Length: 244
Image (cartoon, rainbow, N blue to C red; front, side, top):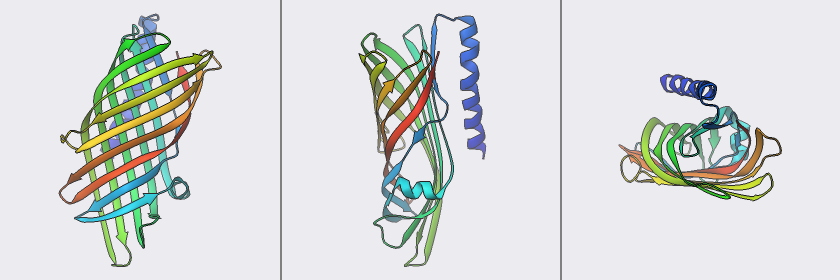
């Protein structure tokens, strides 16, 4: 409950900061907010609790049928076309669901993923490059029911990984652009390794509103005291960006 409250406060701060900054330095700041976007996720990988590991694949159609709660938001700011901040938060509460291709196994899954990074614009123009350094915070409350063995296991874990990455934007036509993002991290600090990839087609028919669609994936290889999470969360992304 405390984690959720802190993240909600963080999201509200993201909404308030632009208004204050814009009133003071109108020409120095650029903001972008995706207040609620759809990430149609699938989950593929290994989930282990108390030393018992199962290979599980949970598809979006199953997630949609059992979805208990979801919240997604992304916010970024850029100062003087150089220094920026990126915040991306995803919350998913999935009810108990049979894992595809895993025998008589049911999995429950609640996750929170927060990406927080500072950016620096290396190149500005038709081809735009940003370098990024930050953290990825992941919280998981997961459970496995091995129905054939009559065993039910559950655990909650959270961890923070350093990440380093880059963003690239290509304005290839009037109102159209290609946006790519990638990062790697972990390095044994918490996860052994983690990466993220995002590709979007951006169509901006209005001055302050754009429509984006693409594909996103986040992989983490984390283990601690009998808990294992070696999985990729991936799927199509679609949303509306508000820019000012």
